[in-house]
Length: 363
Image 1 (tube, rainbow, N blue to C red):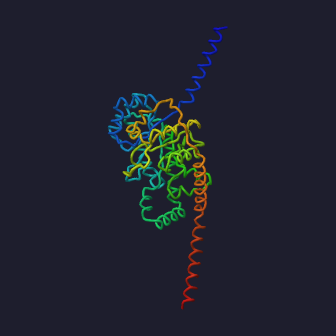
Image 2: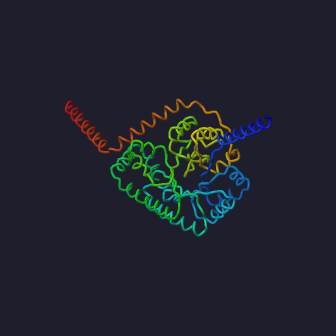
Image 3: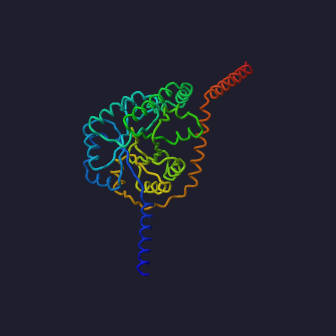
């Protein structure tokens, strides 16, 4: 009887241990757009390799060059069984991130990348495509609201660039599939909002696209919102349907810019993201491996992070809900540029009539 009791106790303890471990496990990967020489420095650092292996992390490597240093780094990662994904990027002159405007260049970039990979015997877990608006948009914004309105109206009325972009990225999907690539597409909350109201407004304005893919990743950068609570609420609001959520940036500067990142990802903030996404059985991808190394995020990581206490998200969730409603309403209105033109035409006629009446009264 005593032996039976002991056996049952051991069995229950084992089951409990497995349950706790399953609850605490979370898959955390990294994205990096480090230049080849810096990637090699990371790969040659045994302490970094040890930690990456310890947490079973995979790396989404931004292909910013085809240098020999990058090849050496990738082969070191492969030797240590650290899986890598090809995050394909363009040169800065071509826009860096893919969009409808540079689809032809992106196709050519893929061809060069594929030849380079074959030549050097590189193996990839996936091809990852991360979209961003037209390169010129920042300059348009700096020119003021009138400039913005002109561009938006032009893009809404003329969909030729968008249509060509859709064709180019459909070709990319076809070519990459033939080469055996699994394709991941990174999207933002704005794209989700556009889909929910079934309009292409955001696609047309920004030059983004709905690319055929094997999996979509949700990108929620912490500097999108002013504090951690709102970022947590945003993740909670948009996480449904996604297995992988990209958070960050851990880097001190914003992507493709020397502008300071107002909220580089910190350890305390990350533990709250981990706690939240674990509840929904999601994986995290941390944008900015370099920053994660320098601010000790990688050093502090483990497979069994203890859950952190989450703040009350109720007020922030309500704010995010209203923001989504407003965004979707705006997209719906902008999806009918004829209405906008008619409105401004009526407004112009009304102002003209009012001006004529005023002049008549004066003279």
